[in-house]
Amino acid sequence: MASLGLAQRIRIGLDGNSGVEFPMMDRAGRLNFGKKRVGFRVMASEGQSVEPDLSVTVNGLKMPNPFVIGSGPPGTNYTVMKRAFDEGWGGVIAKTVSLEADKVKNVTPRYAKLRADANGSAKGQIIGWQNIELISDRPLETMLKEFKQLKEEYPDRILIASIMEEYNKAAWEELIYRCEETGIDAFEINFSCPHGMPERRMGAAVGQDCDLLEEVCGWINAVATVPVWAKMTPNITDITKPARVALNQGCEGVSAINTIMSVMGINLDTLRPEPCVEGYSTPGGYSSKAVHPIALAKVMNIARMMKSEFGDKDYSLSAIGGVETGGDAAEFILLGADTVQVCTGVMMHGYGLVKTLCSELKDFMRKHNFSSIEDFRGTSLEYFTTHTDLVRRQQEAIRQRKAVKKGLQSDKDWTGDGFVQETESMVSN
Image (cartoon, rainbow, N blue to C red; front, side, top):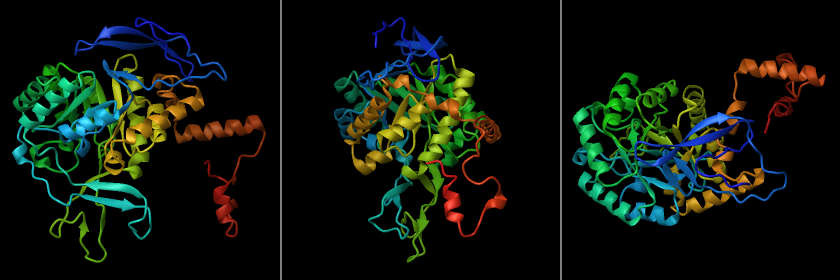
């Protein structure tokens, strides 16, 4: 495939469109590209050997791959963040910090698992993970010192500060100024933590209130000089509403989703909820494999909104939710994600997971002859429609094929004896 200069690059993929990208400076002073879609997209020749390139440039931030450590325990201190960079993660989002860490009091145990085995056997596959963990309880000064040290040692790697504050303009401004002094590359604003300190109007208490979100995003973007991503809560009826507000108020991107409010379960021997702390518990955030389909739907809705309302602007989408394989990541990218975050997956499989993710994503790209992430980003969005349209399409297909559709024609055709087989006749995968 021909090499193109910085002034003109062509997106290559499947949907029949291409985008010539024109260089511009982002507000961090980095060269960036605003996408203007024109003309056509070019597919690699049939049978052509393509060595996939996983590198991405998002809001002017260049990463060797789209895999980013999600904010949480895997980014809680210098040692673990250094490990993430050494293992090859494209970027690291540190655990959320605030001005007054002394107000943060964590408990133990603070995690609980859901296993696929019907009886909750310890040998069953982990499909769900709940946490009642709060943001960083380490002094802000300590975290800032470690941010600075990481940027000095890894100047070409992307370090993103996750921040959260009370409903206080001066506090937000101070936190932004102090973090930027360390040389961090971007902010992710935690508008989505589902548990802990809602009484201080922090986390999801802001992300669920679009009026409050609009005001706080305005404060943040009036002073931030590096890209800002707003992290969305799934615990809301329409996730596109806060995402739209954040982008309209100056954020360069959105991240989705944070964890889902949940109660992991009740111990049927002790009759106490899990995770159990001195006999009691509290609802917490649900993550891991079981949330992946929910996250896909939320990301799809945000991506469609961004494409229809902000299509010619350089906004980004960072996807989160149940990623443990390269295939999981590919699904998010096919729905329009620029980057893919992993948090619980690292807690379960370790920092070396990134090598598996990269290898499996490259295998997917080779299978389809994609040479870059941009070749297939957003390709699957066009295949979502309404149920009414599905009916119309199927009826039209039947007329065109002059054939009987697969499965039963009507509810009256179900039988008792063949119920399982009749069900299977209408399953697509």
